[in-house]
Length: 157
Image (cartoon, rainbow, N blue to C red; front, side):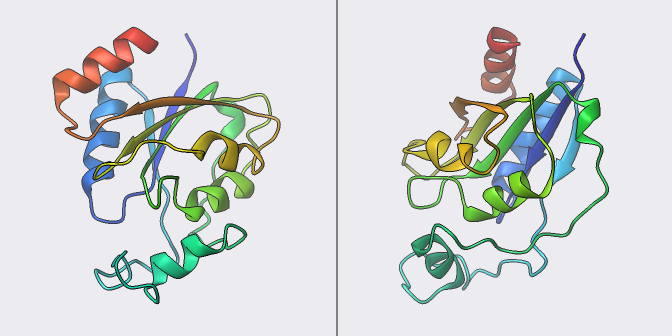
């Protein structure tokens, strides 16, 4: 049986709830990707071109700082990686996370929450941050119900 990790970034709490349910369902460890500077409601205003999230997402090379935690990724075979969709892709803080740890040879399955858009180019944009891992587009879990999560993880794992 392979050891699993559910890693997630959640700016508003929605993705966190989904990640916790997934971790419980697959009996995985849970790891929260935390920004060094937490996002405020104003930071997340996608309608404001000068908001923090808008500025970060307009520059694909931007890497928001994260709270670096000691983590032995070598003990995990599969990583379920969750985040909200921002501008049709993963937030650049996910790239920061992937570049901060060694995911060589790991299988990374994505899950996301979104107000309406899909994964877009997410896999392609994340792959360059961890070229020696296999990243797979998983599923949008917008409703995040226990049944939806259970059906997905049981069909996938």
